[in-house]
Amino acid sequence: MHVHVNAATSADGKLSSRRREQVRISGVDDFARVDEIRAASDAVLVGVGTVLADDPHLTLDDSSLVSARESRGEEPHPARVVADSRARTPTDARILDDVATTYVLVSEDAPEDRCTALEDAGAVVVVAGEGRVSFPEAFGVLESRGVERVMVEGGGEVIFSLFDDALVDELTLYVGSMIIGGRDAPTLADGDGFVEDFPRLSLQSVERVDDGVLLWYRF
Amino acid sequence: MHVHVNAATSADGKLSSRRREQVRISGVDDFARVDEIRAASDAVLVGVGTVLADDPHLTLDDSSLVSARESRGEEPHPARVVADSRARTPTDARILDDVATTYVLVSEDAPEDRCTALEDAGAVVVVAGEGRVSFPEAFGVLESRGVERVMVEGGGEVIFSLFDDALVDELTLYVGSMIIGGRDAPTLADGDGFVEDFPRLSLQSVERVDDGVLLWYRF
Ligand SMILES: NC(=O)c1ccc[n+]([C@@H]2O[C@H](COP(=O)([O-])OP(=O)(O)OC[C@H]3O[C@@H](n4cnc5c(N)ncnc54)[C@H](OP(=O)(O)O)[C@@H]3O)[C@@H](O)[C@H]2O)c1
Ligand SMILES: NC(=O)c1ccc[n+]([C@@H]2O[C@H](COP(=O)([O-])OP(=O)(O)OC[C@H]3O[C@@H](n4cnc5c(N)ncnc54)[C@H](OP(=O)(O)O)[C@@H]3O)[C@@H](O)[C@H]2O)c1
Image (tube, rainbow over all chains, first blue to last red; front, side, top):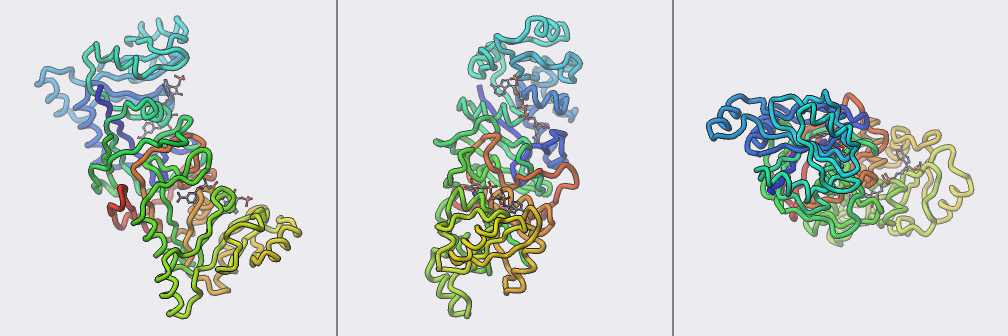
């Protein structure tokens, strides 16, 4: 699985404020770029924290990107994937509409009635891992269904786990020219954090976009 | 007072790991740059959190920068300043040696015996603010003693307060190509954080330094 993490942070590394409300960090040029990465992906992944905080749709905005996918014989939109160990995704979440396929990755501990409710709402439920979703295992299942390129759009808990599992191939990071602050605000990589052997990335390019900067890293 | 904040973070905005041990984020070129900003400053400020975690010396490494200051009729090293409301700086801290003047900013609530102990250890104690050090008030006192340019080297609590007080003029941020992670690791700007009216910076330049990138912002 090719894993591309994309996110926008403030200069101090925050994905949003301590209130976990969506903060507009980048601008129109960056939004267009994000849409293009989505269009080139088989699936877009977020954690259930992001679903509960932002209720994102995760489909393509630009209709010409949709047409291009269709003319390549692909689904109009990439699939949507939620990492949601306990199947807490609300059945009226926007990602569960029928515009694209939606996979909900759950753990073996997810309540069965919640899994059934999600399936009734149109989701494909994938069980992988005990306690918490195991990404290596879940990605194996997604690959068997033709998902070869996944774009990860957050949040900080899921992104940390993917680095911890050494699954990340690319990171594009838009650093906005603002300060959010807050010791409890979500950052690009939360989780328990590393204390040694910090993952080292290789900076591929640096580009000014909107009023901030876009950093592209590979591993 | 001209306030220049300088720091090095991982790509995910962390100043160090959750263990709060010093992490080598940048390289030799960045260290040399930091030394030059120090040399051009009248004082270098840190919070007591950084003193307790790292026990920094905060003097100039490069002897040619020392000579240049001396030939301009300045003190060999910039003064050192610690924001330390309750006068917790250990009397054997490296910043209390006699290589440069050291100001300890305390609040009115600092225990008198601790203040006396710090003065005996060679510090100039400045009382400013109730409960916590008031930077606007403390900077007034420092200015009256000839400190016109202060460089702030961290940590995240002090940097957030300076943004909150709208005292920051410049930010130079080295973003290292590594991930530290950790929801409890210190970030560039901690404190309570902003929830609206986020301070907006103006990106002046972007430069590749060592294996990371140096961002320079003004307000
Ligand atoms: N600026 C941006 O680019 C951007 C993008 C996305 C999100 N955000 C912001 O980020 C915030 C949400 O981030 P977040 O970190 O709280 O949530 P998140 O990473 O979206 O979701 C975290 C949740 O995912 C579930 N999960 C399942 N398997 C996991 C695994 N193996 N590792 C880690 N988590 C796993 C966990 O809940 P269970 O244990 O219940 O499964 C965990 O609590 C919101 O404020 C949102 O606005 C910003
Ligand atoms: N990578 C880098 O460039 C870099 C640079 C510096 C530090 N660091 C790291 O940062 C960490 C320390 O950061 P930190 O955020 O914990 O500590 P900090 O900002 O250095 O110090 C925080 C302390 O300063 C005192 N303070 C006094 N007046 C204040 C005010 N008005 N506003 C805020 N604080 C005030 C407070 O203690 P009182 O209430 O007792 O006064 C506060 O707890 C360490 O892990 C260190 O290694 C990294």
